[in-house]
Image (cartoon, rainbow, N blue to C red):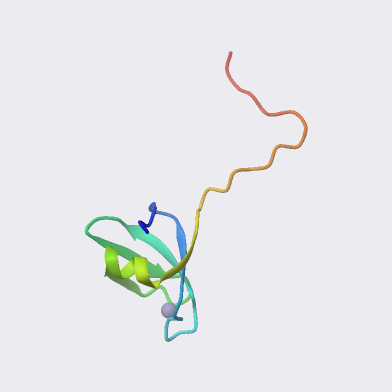
Length: 76
Ligand SMILES: [Zn+2]
């Protein structure tokens, strides 16, 4: 399964970092994917194929706000 990642996404890994954290911020995309530990801020570069095996869940940074009532429209 291909991993659909964007810079700014947070990924939950299957295995915890030695610091005990599971959440990593995606900071770089390419042949290798750069991630930063959300707790100790250590940076890692992982091959995409390795990432696909290690990621448990992708948490997109931009969450669609729920519409309650009127949608806000701008412009004309
Ligand atoms: Zn860490």
